Image (cartoon, rainbow, N blue to C red; front, side, top):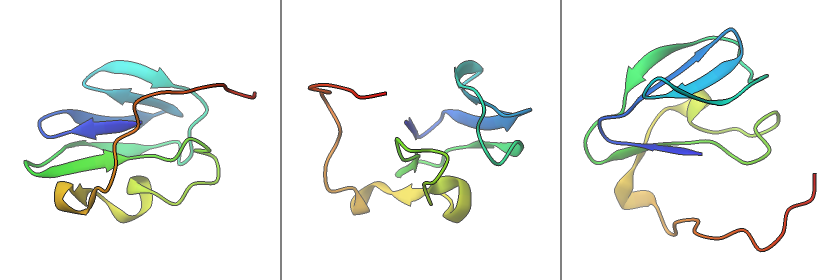
Length: 78
């Protein structure tokens, strides 16, 4: 999951919302105050969100530090 400049990210009661659109449930931490992503930055979360150390912990990432952008899932195992 990613959020780009101008979008708002919030976790409330374990539900992740980006710009008021609910995307994931059962997220930890259960609460994250709403924050608007700054110009030139992105908010990133790992696909294994229950164990990922990501923007929820260390904040936004400068777009200059992004090396690749996810575009396609070939297969998924749940």
